[in-house]
Length: 214
Image (cartoon, rainbow, N blue to C red; front, side):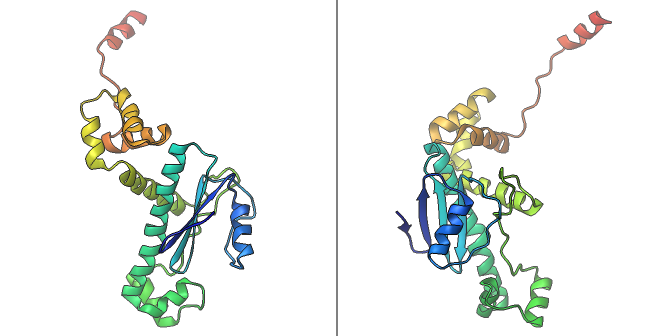
């Protein structure tokens, strides 16, 4: 079953793999670039011109599925729609033909894009190893950025921070999991983002212990 929204189609899949995504598009006579190695991501976003396709694995726990959807929506908005809109504003509507792979940029477009620092190609976020390891530093950056937006969508900082401020550090993760339904691993990451890295508590006792050992 596919859920069609104005600019996005949501495609739930039991046992998602990158080759499944490739074959899904192939049956619809749409060519997309996928890695040769098959792997099993939690989710994936592909975009054809102005329309996005978001896939996620329904065999994942519900909290992971929820975070995956927010993460993939972030990719579609920030890594696809926003660059297209910025290029169109800066270089005109015809530049979208370059974005969509219908033609190469002419000299004027290429120079304008370079001086204005406007990318004319989408980053291929599927460029990973079999285990999902990230092969490009730029992909690592956009993945962390998508996580940040997903956190804001599911657990806005304006609501999460007041919840955590009066809690012991060890209870903060539990609070985010209970209140906002974040996966525990992601909740630990969000606590570090909101409160900073945990500093070891100062203890004068260790100095006396060192003297006794000497």
